[in-house]
Length: 171
Length: 171
DNA sequence: ATAAACGGGACCATTTTAGTCCAGATTAGA
DNA sequence: TCTAATCTGGACTAAAATGGTCCCGTTTAT
Ligand code: FES
Ligand code: FES
Image (cartoon, rainbow over all chains, first blue to last red; front, top):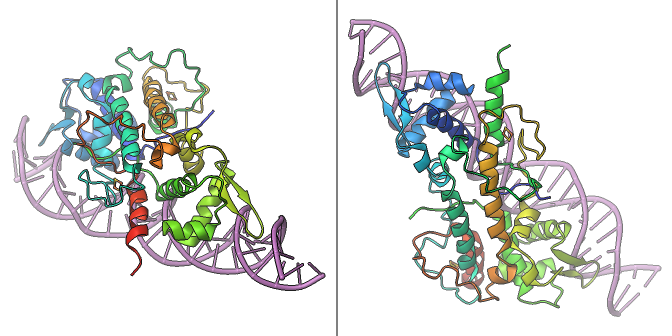
């Protein structure tokens, strides 16, 4: 049963597809237009996402004629967490929290602590998935074995769409 | 370092605060206005959230004069996942996925699988946190021990705000 | 020089989210 | 029976986030 969980933004999904494309072709230096064609994602958008990934240090860019992008490091060493961080940014950090303890309400508050625990757990699992796995290059992901596929991905759906588009869209 | 992760919606945060208030006072049947006062959250909003929680089966409601809300089951048996599900709803389920396999692109797709793994891990950790812990009643959450508080909660921040408001707002 | 790329933003349209409000149904108690 | 206090459902508006596009400047191989 149950549906989803984390709601990945579309941009992040695109990022995954783009990174996967790059991972599939290390050494190469692919330009934004080239990637746009391969992934069937709108060229301006591709450009935007790549810029973000560059700032995040996940891809290396070469400027000038014949410029382009390539992974900054091996796909095995790029974690899902890193991708999320680059795209989703240092969001949240709403109100209190902030790490330091300027919360005068310790009485009722164990809240932050508990959420932190969740947060940490999520984070850890995110570190355990590499781009290589996301790209389907590393086939060492039979972690799902044994768990009947009762649940829907929800996440990664858009990526799938882009990939699908890649195949069909030619007419 | 690093910032956040899951971006909890404000409504979900309110839900946590409200549920925590109810958990702190089982047996009681608190009305929406009463809860609004205790939590310092806007009354209409409180009402709205409670309605959602009711539909989600997390709280039981009594109508009519002297009506109100109370937890549907013990705080120890309500997981963070349940709260998220009730509020965030059966979202996502974008495009492909859907559980069944109508994805013709098995070539490049190991994507879904990897994301599912992440999704599953998150889900599991969410199941491991009870409302009792979130409310700070169950003090068995020293899971964070040993992890220097390098990271910010981000999650739960809003809840803290509401609680804080509770204390300060009187002027 | 020139053409093809990247880089940084501004910008707008659309969608999502928050929050308010109102009209109907329910029920304890006078 | 009548009333007042509640919950229930949904419509509605305002504000914010998101997705996408465009433009202009810089870089660099040829
Ligand atoms: S595209 Fe749907 S699971 Fe791979
Ligand atoms: S209110 Fe900030 S950690 Fe509790």
